[in-house]
Image 1 (tube, rainbow, N blue to C red):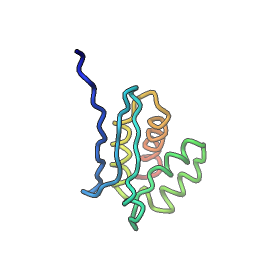
Image 2 (cartoon, rainbow, N blue to C red):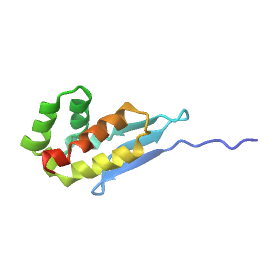
Image 3 (tube, helix red, strand yellow):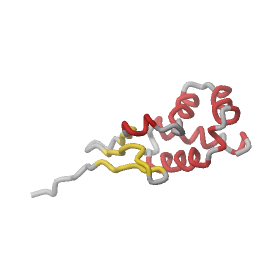
Amino acid sequence: MPRRRLHISLRVLLNNRLVGHLRKEPGGAIYFRYDESRLSWSNAIPLSLGMILFAVGHGEALKRFLVEDGAGNDQRFWRLAQALSALYPASTEEKRWVDGVLARKKGLGF
């Protein structure tokens, strides 16, 4: 009898606070879902906004978000981006987006 594969959800923590849950589906897709408690954080790091701005080609808006709005000054933003880059499979749009944000880090002075 073949062994049944388990696909469990992993808890994602940032500074020992629950951010969300990461799950690998039987087909290999990886999904991340923010935890409801994160919505109440006063200092939540909106990494997804940076990825979205890159994905839709809004380079100036991405620069404003990272530089003028200050998201790029928070090292937690970059650590989370690095972690997500390592987690996403190479062929996914999400990996391309987060890697695109990371590629602009040095050019923006971070």
